[in-house]
Image 1: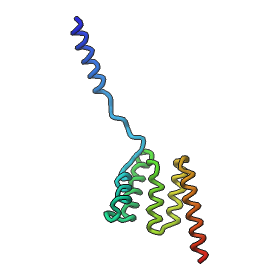
Image 2 (image 1 turned 180 degrees about the vertical axis):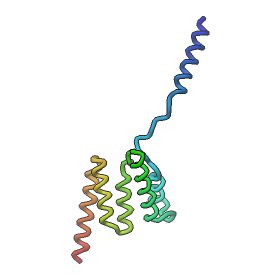
Image 3 (image 1 turned 45 degrees about the horizontal axis):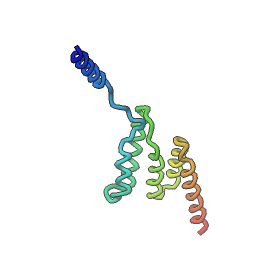
Length: 125
């Protein structure tokens, strides 16, 4: 009798465990991890323009699915735009990162302040 109860309990447990689905990610990561790796480790493999294009497509896909963009993606796009000397677009992405993720405000404010200080010094020459 105890063996039957034990076997039935094991079958019920396995059945319930089989019904559990994989957890859904909080963010739509897209190619962000790969592009970050390429930028930092293998910059010769892809250009900043290619990375910007791929990441902007990922943002569009995330918005279409009503999914959240991962933290740091907008800041990464800002840095990529700085690499190609597109300061105004970099500022837009830094501000978007600060608005989307308020915990990044201190870092984004420092970057923006440094950018404006450098543009003021660069413009005075």
